[in-house]
Image (cartoon, rainbow, N blue to C red; front, side):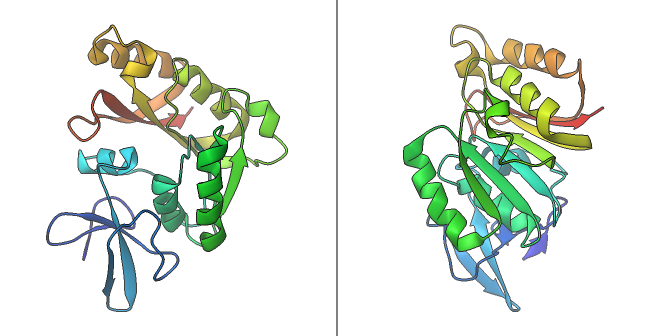
Length: 220
């Protein structure tokens, strides 16, 4: 296993991505586990995680570090959240939010195994409604397939992201406007983000995630 340019993300001889497993012997979504020199690694499937897809497409830094607090919007059943959990480690914390009770039930089981995930059933479009359950964070991560996904992202940054913090956004163009070309939508998103944030990196995710792009931003 060799390190990649991305901190604490590794690659094997077949060029598959891995993180160090926070909970040895426990899988989250049927991923491959590999033990090497006393450390267990979990394969990070680039076709099931937009963050992994961004790394696969050349993103050199995702700014996740041990001990950080992360607000994850649109956590679903926890595939990517579990790898974020690996990266922030036992001293970090991931607030994992989703509005769907069905997926949140599965997220709760992932959290029970890991200990550094706080599941929150809530609406990312109304950040004030979970203010009593989320503290200021080092990273805001969003994967919310809604028409107003950029507005949702910015509202949560305003409320929860620490000064100089980083914000990671997966944009699904077809959720914003199915009639327009993704390239034009991504350009509009970029312009909107740049009003209040510094864009550190941008990647389109085709063919791993069709009509998706990934933005990494820093709070000014």
